[in-house]
Image 1 (spheres, rainbow, N blue to C red):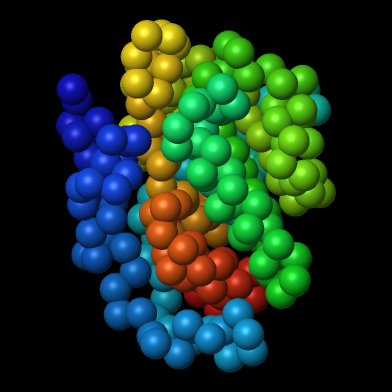
Image 2: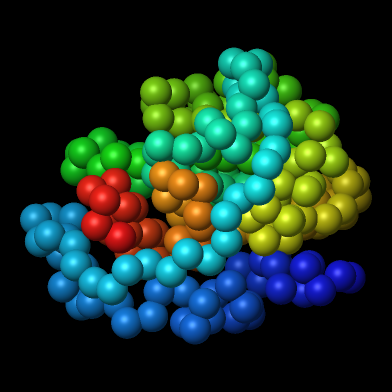
Length: 220
């Protein structure tokens, strides 16, 4: 396993291990307690969020079959997730959390969009991804699912987002043979990742929305 994979996040670590990308030194140190009630009226404050890495060039397609590149990210704040539609374990929980976040984003008018990379691109065609989004009642005006060439997906997820991804579909194996990171990544308008958050922990995803609100308001 390469050093990139050792530093990355995978399904097996979801509830059992503390990994590098979840350490406080990498995440958002010095968080203000005032941010906790921000979603119900308190203005978010705090130190600037760190710029961890800038997402590199890629070219994929969205659920409508249209080209989507790194340039498509610019000008918007994004919450990025990594999943696949036939995942039997962690991915449904990730989607449930994202849909909960979508409701908060709409209710609180937070300027953020959702970006989901399929890590099973050969199966997850645009048509499959559209049906998947419809099943979860996502708002396609602020939600993008991406698929495309497998090698591009691999490079984008692992090298661009620093998220673990390995394996191939195998019905006899756990997670159908695909292991991938379950953390969410927060991107600013210039494609910089500003934090990683555990999708399994509601306090972390609430914190993520507070930070997204700051980025959307140009405050971070």
